[in-house]
Image (cartoon, rainbow, N blue to C red):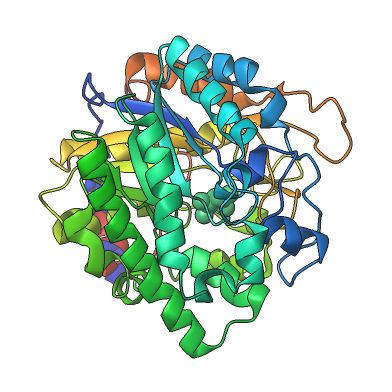
Amino acid sequence: MLGAALAASAVRRPPRPGVAPLPADFRWGVALAGVQSEGHCPDSNWRRYSEQHAPTVSDEIGDTADWFCHVEEDVARAKDLGIGTFRYSVEWARTQPAPGELDPEGFAFYDKVIDTIEATGLKPMITLDHWVYPGWLADRGGWLCDDVVELWLQHARRVVERYAGRDVTWITINEPGIYVGFERRNRKLGRMEVGTMKRRLVEAHRGAYALVKSLDPGALVTSNIAYLPAPLNLIDDRWFFDQTIDTMDFLGIDYYYGLSVGNPTVVNDLVGRLWRIRTQPDGLLHALRIYHRKAPHLPIWIVENGICTDNGKPRSDGLTRSDHLLDHLYYLQRAADEGIPVMGYNYWSLTDNYEWGSYRPRFGLYRVDVLTDSAKTRHETDGVATYRAAIARNGVPEGYRPVRREAWGSPAAPWSTTLGRLTHQ
Ligand code: BGC
């Protein structure tokens, strides 16, 4: 009986809906971050973690993808994709090598970055803190230093003052929750210390928001959250997101992984085997619904999304960078069709880079064999042509159907991903 009923519902099930192109003013971008990409690293918490082989580290940073010496050509590559926004970070460690001492050369590098971005017709998205602070602050305890918020805000002020009026979109602190996680493991922070760091990150974000509002009025500000598969996100949101939502001009969400009964592979994250995680594109739609419900008044920008390979090899599940990208855009467009105000999407990352302790996970649209190629040659992946074409048409090709099956039994949407899927796929 049940078999017959299921068979009948399978026959009757409506086709998955097609999706409309994203709005004409949708913002397309790429993202990278200082210590992960620049090379020629000044003394910082991360340079030390790398050199001292801290708990999360297997490879030393070295000169990574050498963005420091490839600015013009990488910005040209980004432009050639058709994007409008280039996200990068301005490293405190490079601009202030010692307490009370600023490095004009460090600022000159970031001046060159923003000048190049502007000259190419792109707009900058600047992250003030992508998990890196100067070595001298590490000596004083990093986020446990009593003056850290004041010192951090001085860094923020210098950067905002310098680049105000240049059409910057500001990200204060990248993924606060993951930042705390790395600091906890690499500095062996205790429970109380973790609490202190969390409180200070909230304070720093709020201070930076006020700074931008006074120094660069009209510019958009947020702090991007890493989407932790539901229901973990609800717990994690309590200490940062829920405390800062009144100081966000848009929601910046980094979506990488989902979690469901049918796909628990996200546990590979705990041991750094990111390439073994089976990505869950429909989870992006669930994430967007959840955050739209939380903050219906705010538009949403996916400020990071991407997939990693094991050292650039084809993935064992057969999914290509191109499939992954289109599958996610499909669900982004579904969200837009539902009326969720999605305003932008950044691909993480333009090139392979230092994945916080290892070069093995490769996220780049361009492959760079950092450990074996001293010239740091950029090799185009299949994601490049796909992203270019998607941007040109503002979405997936007409009639596109995702390659990856929808999740089964996701806590983010229990009804539609269990019983509902029998009738809605
Ligand atoms: C971070 C990036 C990281 C990426 C891929 C995000 O959590 O912001 O720095 O490289 O995910 O793991």
